[in-house]
Image (tube, rainbow, N blue to C red; front, side):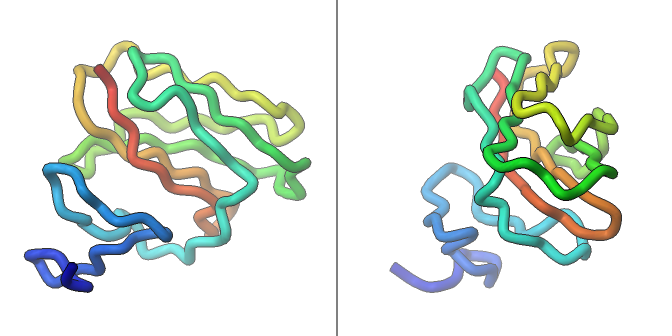
Length: 118
């Protein structure tokens, strides 16, 4: 398996090999990406309602969830309560497709996940 995709981007992204129809397009932000093991999003694929799970108590109090479509257009931005362990994220008003969920704190990206809405 080549280490780079057809566009010259790393084929292995965040410890996973991209085997889907789309090659890795790299981060949609230039902010530094932190270790995202404290967060999990499910179900994925979803029908419109996602759950962002904070596995550990967050030391951040300025968390923001942003969801972008494949064209890079932000379709949702929401400040969230860092105290909650399970945070609902509703994208039911968006068409079926591929999205990117990014969780930030200040100028740091804490977590990034590709989302599929069916």
